[in-house]
Image 1 (cartoon, one colour):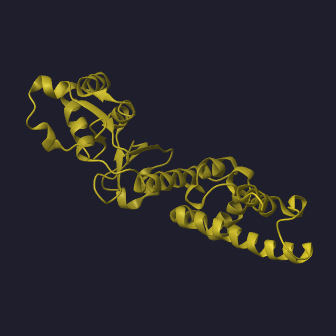
Image 2 (cartoon, rainbow, N blue to C red):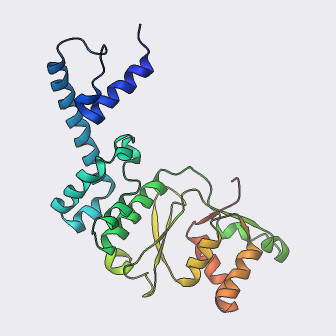
Image 3 (cartoon, helix red, strand yellow):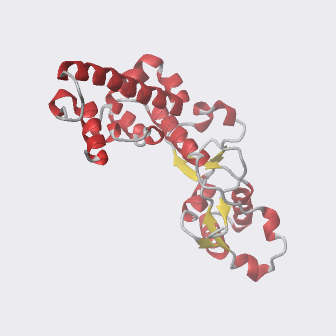
Length: 245
């Protein structure tokens, strides 16, 4: 009896590398007929990868146009690292790949946002810190409050105008916004354009931090009067959680 794990690995190898990796002894029948069947199976897998990319990056595809998106997608899914991935992880690095293959900044930014959106959607559940959670704290308790990034939160730096890239955010995007915060405090994934102060605070909170330290960063970055409102806005967006919460 053969080793199932080894046979599976040999089967995958021939799908990825073609006839040169044909595994002797795994299949019954003439090699030519087996290879014909494997070719059909490999084509099905390749098509599934392309469809997975289309579903992962629908707005990027729309912006690029189907033909341009499809042409680059075929190159991407044939990369050795990508061929070995599960479909759920197929889009990792796609935004960087687009940048290396002549896509414009808006297309690359949109791909990065869509990939972050997907990760936020599938992130672990956790209660988001709410402004009402602060109501019972005295000054010292508030300043010593430990904060962590909610597991569904993603911060994406972009090069292009957020209001142009995502027109539905035009009313909430500051003209100089170059960061997009993605949160999922409940069931819905939300997008929040950030001004420079909010972006600085979001970067600071990517590692566990106390409210005291976050407030110090806010005061150092902007006027004292703007510090707490900026922090409260991020809490209201669902960006933060209690460590281990």
